[in-house]
Length: 164
Image (cartoon, rainbow, N blue to C red; front, top):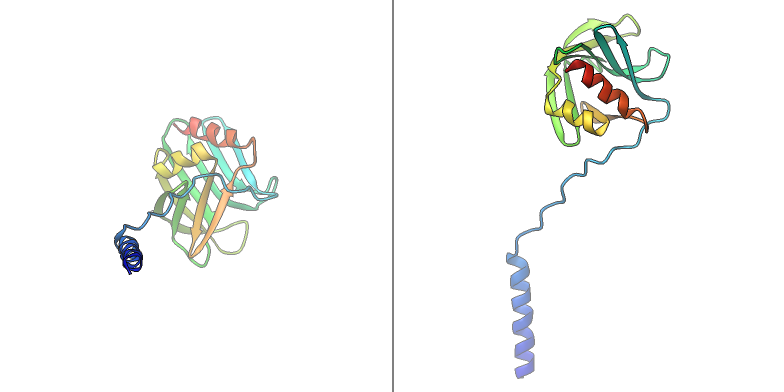
């Protein structure tokens, strides 16, 4: 009987400890780079004091996201096709996020509109993008990740070096 009582007491103590112990927090989100998409990459172009960084298909009008800046301005101009009349850039990189209200203008390259917005180049989401080589755009509930292929990260860094 003594052994049975001890067994019940230990079981009750163990269950009590489980019921009152704090929950283990979820692990932090890993900022590891997502896989690049075949055929898409980051492309940089510099003409004098102006620089452009675009994510899309080489030598085509297929561009998902584009940043322009003037040398040393510390400001970015964001351009992307508007999906279903959206009017904001909602960007994420490695856990940092930012939203930028956008204006719309008709696209000369495809049906629909282009979103335009301005942002500081030193915003945390852009600095994280600069370090990691990828950024994501939220489109409603959909997340589109724009990851550099190995070796293309240097284009991202070169662009931000120009912008200041």
